[in-house]
Image 1 (tube, rainbow, N blue to C red):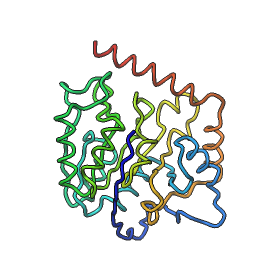
Image 2: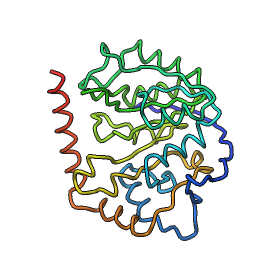
Image 3: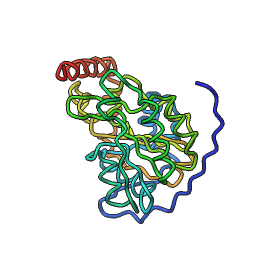
Image 4: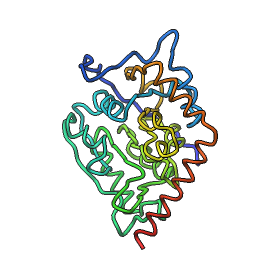
Length: 265
């Protein structure tokens, strides 16, 4: 990828005091019991441990993103209507707008790029909002739609430098072109990742329920993460260390992509 110098600045308002439903703890502690989990998550996405905030559930991760980055702001949604971040944005953003970046004429299971017109529309859309949420891939009926490539993500960032980009990559195990590692190299980009049903099917039921947010330490400075119970934390680490777990999950993902392709034919 061609080197690109991008300057990004984004102010984060102090989070609301924790509510009864938001069980959170400071991101940094002198002796961090989550260190084994952070190290394993960081190794999976080639990041530093200070670039990750883990959560016990997808719901708590999306709620934390909403309270810190979406609340009171203009949010653009390039995401399915019922995605977790779409629902949170409609609850707390100052305003929301939606853009369909994967229509039937430009996106299929085997086409991972938007055409020029759609990419241009996404860039214009990004310039008109404070925060742009992009879900990738998007599961629509039997389709697995991938709205943009890493190169196109960089172009969106370069041409809308003031907009915070939040990538909903909860279904990235199903992607042909993953975005996480590329996104972490692009300033002003936050990533939401999870594990989900594919992991549960391979015996990693505890891992399947957790999520994590990844981004530059400057974005996570005022962010918060969940406290894990000791036994739950031990199970998560043990499941992530399971023999061949990644290979088995990826094999299941390939089978699911094939099945969805056949269902459309």
